[in-house]
Amino acid sequence: MLIIAAALVLGLHLLIIAFNIAGMIIIPLGAWRGWRFVRKPGWRTLHLASLGVTALQAAFGQACFLTIWEADLLGLPDAPQPMIMAWVSNLIYWPLPIWAFAIAYGLAFAYVVALLWLVPVEKGMAAKETGE
Image 1 (cartoon, one colour):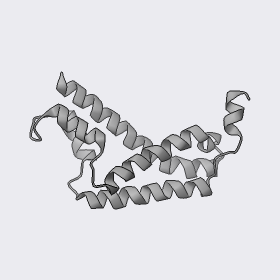
Image 2 (cartoon, one colour; image 1 turned 180 degrees about the vertical axis):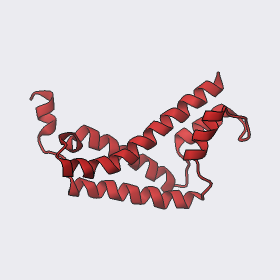
Image 3 (tube, rainbow, N blue to C red; image 1 turned 135 degrees about the vertical axis):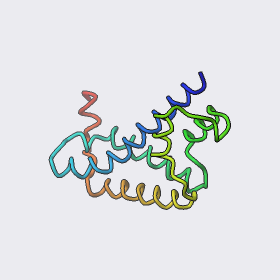
Image 4 (tube, one colour; image 1 turned 90 degrees about the vertical axis):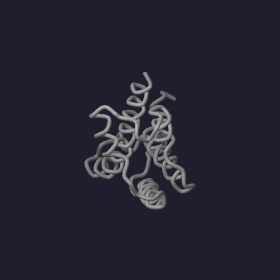
């Protein structure tokens, strides 16, 4: 049962990584193509917060809480994983020092903050969406 829980955590982790990377590409592309959703405050806030948490954890020398949670569910670090789970783990867990991740995540977060000025969120959009 723990292996299933660990696989679910790994899947969630992969979805969050895909969301973060896709957002960094979709926001400027969407601004160029005129896609309105890239200027929605809820979506942008979620994207900024997701990358902010990741960058902050790395800046403090901590692994992502999802990484820690998955490792705890699996038990020992050398516990066998199902083939697909091992492949996905190898895709997202790189054997680099934490400072390298801190720099990479810090740069990604700075880029997303810069996107707030390059592709600003529409003012008053939140009121329009709720019907106020």
